[in-house]
Image 1 (cartoon, one colour):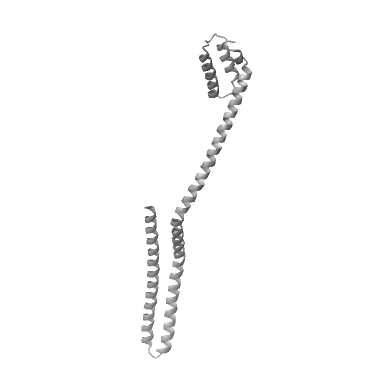
Image 2: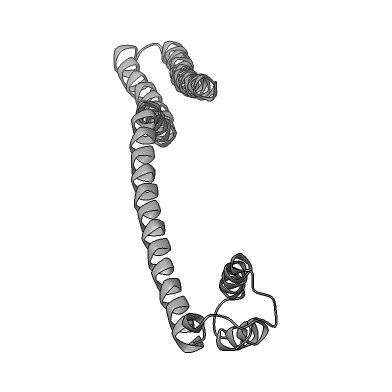
Length: 191
């Protein structure tokens, strides 16, 4: 069998192999024959004339190479997983000091938002209760002075409105303070 027919037979028998692997095998044997000084029409040595054995050896080498590459990829994926876990641990270590205050601030803000309407309502009810109590108390005390009763009614009505306004003022200032502190922390954390 000459070199040219060997190349054709080898290429035909390696049809089920990837192109790159086929090309590498053909190049290997061409270099081998070039080193022997064989031309295209020269006879190749007897040890290379059994094409079936050569194809079998090439396919076995390819399987071994695939197993080696797969084990390298598996090692890489193990190391990659370890690095991801370590990165997550470090991220958690740095995120916890930032996350805990943010979570607490958020919870405080939620509680403030929930309790502001309740506090305003209670202040209003309390101011009305104080006004009613004042009217009843003053009517008993100043029963002979109707103008005094009317005057006390207006005084306590004014006090109840002021109490309501004061409670509303305190709640709004508290809310503004909490929001400002949250914004400051957010700005500080972004830097």
